Length: 219
Image 1 (cartoon, helix red, strand yellow):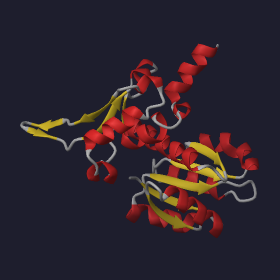
Image 2 (image 1 turned 135 degrees about the vertical axis):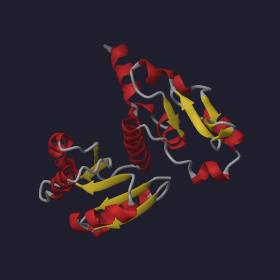
Image 3 (image 1 turned 45 degrees about the vertical axis):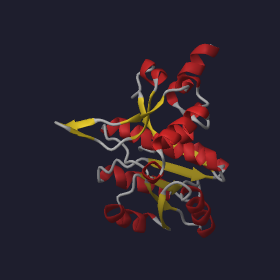
Image 4 (image 1 turned 90 degrees about the vertical axis):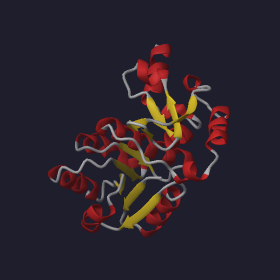
């Protein structure tokens, strides 16, 4: 369960995005860049979700401020179809993704999972063990994920991971998958519960390695 900070000037959009994001994550909402920037240090979000609209350039202001302060929190931009023309500029300023609003739950989950995975690959950090894992029978959860696996590269690859962290000590067990396809295309092969649930077992077309594999095989 990640911490998401949503910044949007529209009350109805904040409510919609909070509802979508709150299904799997902890959410805090703000209505402008200034209040959003003030919320970052105490809240320490894992992902920022910000509106992007050609009539409102707050998103670019946020991205510039993050860059100035060297804050590397992943940023997902959401907006109407017309806002997509600003996506290339926003990505140059550090945005991870643009999603057209309103989006389906599965689409939003996958974009968040990808943003978290990209951040983990860049920092080398492992995601925190989720509440679902803490409260579940991991053997049953492992079986369920393997049974519902959509990506061919992940078939029967979900396992329970426990790492040696020091002499005689191991980490708490968690759900993991070591993806041969991601390794083949130069991505970090290890993915964890939320990415497995929202991408591998839902729609693998959101995975960068899967996209490269599909492009290569349709060329």
